[in-house]
Image 1 (tube, rainbow, N blue to C red):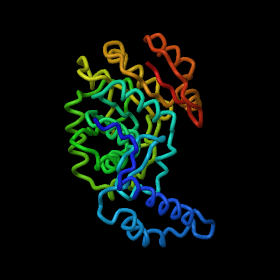
Image 2: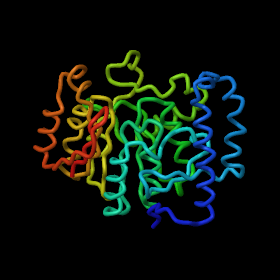
Image 3: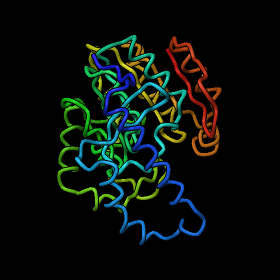
Image 4: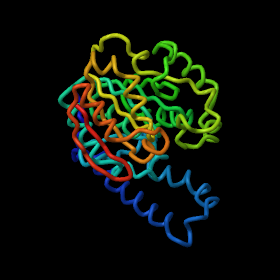
Length: 293
C-alpha cells in the first residue's frame, strides 16, 4: 500500500528542482509591476508548464510534510503544500489507521483533499461532491494522475432535503459532465455555490442519508466544507452517522452559520456530541477545523 511517504528517488530529487522553478515563477508573477499583466501570463503559461513537466508525467507536490501527490502541471500555481495543514495531517493519520476507506468529500472545490486521499492509500475510494460543475471537472483533472478508477463525482447541493439515490445522482452527474467541457464550465469559475446563492433552482439537492441508505462495507470519513450549511449536512446524515459512525472532518464557519442560517457553532457542537462523537479542534483560521470521531 502506497502511503505517499516522501523518499529520495530521482523523481523526488527532480521535484526539488521543479519547486525552485515554481517558487521563482510565483515571485515574478506576484511582483507589483507584473502582477496585473494577465495577457502576458496567458501567453507564457504553456511554456512554463512545459518547463515544469516536459514529459507530461505530472508534477509532484507535498501536502503537510509527508503526503506526496502527483498532479497535472497546470496546478503549479496553487499553494497546495500549505493548504489547511492540520486537516491534512489528521486525514493522513486517520486513513493510515483505516486502510481501504471511503472518503466523502463534500464541497470538494478543486480537489485538494480528494487527491491527497487517493495518494495516501492506493486502496481508498473518494466520492467528491460539489454544486459547481467547474469544481467537479477540475477535481477530476486534479486526481487524473492517481491510480485506478477510484474517484466518483456527484453534482449537487448537500442539505437535509430528501433526494435521489446514489445511483441516480451518479448517472445524472455523468450526463451533465459529459455534455460540457472545463472551458465551458469555467464561466462559473470556482465560486462557492451555496444554498443561499442566486439562480440555484437547477442544481440537484442531495441528502447523505438517501445517498448511503445501507451499511457501509468500508471505513468511512465524511469531509464537509459548505460555507455555513454544516448543520444542514449533519441533519441530513443522522441515520448514516448513527449506523456507520464515520469520522467527520468539518470546516465550521461560525459567522455564516449565524448570519445566513440562523444557527451557531455551539449548537452544531452539541448536536455532534449528542450523536456520540468526540470533537477535536484542529485549527482556527477564517474557519474552525474539527475532527470528530
